Image (cartoon, rainbow, N blue to C red; front, side):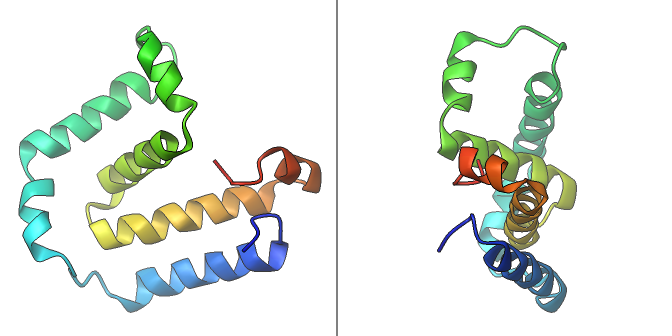
Length: 119
């Protein structure tokens, strides 16, 4: 599996769109929804994005710069922001994969070599 391959990225994008449209917002994890949809959790997501998602709002703590250098944290942050937008955990995964594959598709071959794992 290579994130350098244009055909793979197109397939990944198509599968993500198909997943979002075919599952028709069916909730595969209903027990998690009551926790994730709580005002506290949702509020933290929005505040996290509002404070740290835009530059110039506040000075970030140094630990966040270290965390943002880690791939898993970048993906976690993307998932949080995506969830804030779509409010469905399954759609969140599909839309995150779609976004990442489209970003990689827009990159030139040289940019893909510089970013082999998308994040």
